[in-house]
Image 1 (cartoon, rainbow, N blue to C red):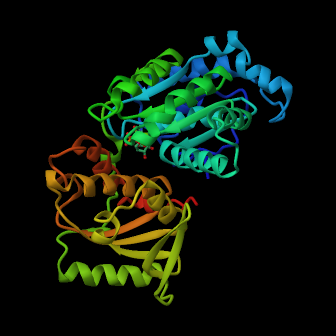
Image 2 (cartoon, rainbow, N blue to C red):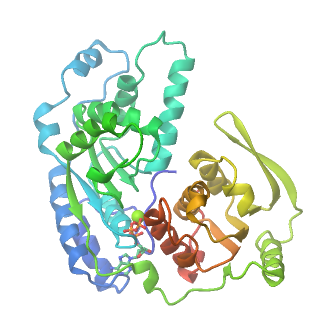
Image 3 (tube, rainbow, N blue to C red):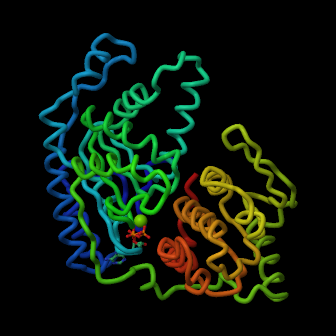
Length: 392
Ligand SMILES: Nc1ncnc2c1ncn2[C@@H]1O[C@H](COP(=O)(O)OP(=O)(O)OP(=O)(O)O)[C@@H](O)[C@H]1O
Ligand SMILES: [Mg+2]
C-alpha cells in the first residue's frame, strides 16, 4: 500500500482548493500540531509547488508499444514543463516533521496521477520489475526506459519517504532511472535524513554514483527542515512495550503479551514468500509473530524480508535486543531496516532489550541513522502509535 496518510487526523479526501499550507494551519488551529516556524516555512515552499502542480498532466499516457512512445523516449514529453517544475528534497534530523509535511502536501496535491511510497519499497519493486523484464526474455534490451514509461504512466507526482541509498545495486540503477523519469516530466518530492551530497558517501563505487547526485540537484530544490525538536520525543503517553533488561521477568512479560495480542490463537510455524525465497517464521499466532533479535538481525535478511514481516503481521514480539558495538554494524543496519519497516506499516512492537533505545548503538558505522531508529522506538511505545491501524 502506497498511499499512507500521516496520523493523526488527516483524511485523504482533501478538497482541491485546499493546499498544504492551509492544511498545516488547520492542524495547528485544531491543536493536533504545535506551531513551528521552520515547518511553517517548509509548508510555504510546499504550497508554492502545490500551486505550480495544479492540473499538471504531461501527455505521457500512450500505449506501451505505440510509435509515439518510442518517439517520445528520445524527445522528452514536455521539455518546458519538466524543466520548470522543480521537486523538493526535504532533509533534516529525525522527528522534525518531514514526513508529516510531505503527507499534507501529497493529500492536497491536485494532480491526476500521484503516488507516495517508502523509498525502500520503491527499490524493492524496481528490482522486482527489472528481474521480471529480464525473465520475460527481452533479449538483452535495456529495462530502464520501459520501467520509466510505466512509472510515469502510473504517477506524474512521486513522493518518496526516507530517501536513502545504502546498496550498490540501487546506486547503479538510480541515475538512469531518475534521468528517464525527469525526462518524462515526473516531479519528485522526497524526505531524507541525508543531504544529496552525502548520499552513498564512503561506499565503494561512489564515483559512479556522483552523476545521480547532480541529476537530483538539477531537478529538486533542497530544503533543510530545521524544526525545533524531535516531536516524537515530545509525547508524554509512552507506555510499557519496551522491557529492560531482557531477564526472566521480561520473558514472562513478552510471553503474556504474545498470548494477549494473538488472543490465545494456537502458535504455529509459518512461511512467508519473499521474491522467490522462503522466510520461515517459527512462532506465529493470529496475526502476531515472535522472533528473537538473533533470528531477525544476526542472519542475512534484507529490507524485502522486513517488509514482508511488516505487511503480514500486525504485531511483533521481539526478544533480547542486545547493546550493539561497532563490530555489530551489520546487525545494527538490519535492525534499522527492521524498525523502519515496522514503523512504516504501523506494526505494534513489544520487545525486551539490554538498554533503552538511545543506549542500543552508541557508536559505530550507521550510528547516525540509528538516531532515527531510537526516535521511532520511543514513538512506537506511545498510546497514539499503538492505537493506529496496521497498514498492509
Ligand atoms: N509541529 C508538530 N507538533 C506536534 N507533533 C508533530 C509536529 N511535527 C511533527 N509531529 C509529529 O512527530 C512525529 C514525527 O514526525 P515525522 O514522522 O514527520 O518526522 P520526520 O522528520 O519524518 O522524521 P524521520 O527523519 O525519523 O523520518 C509524527 O508523529 C508527527 O505527527
Ligand atoms: Mg520521516
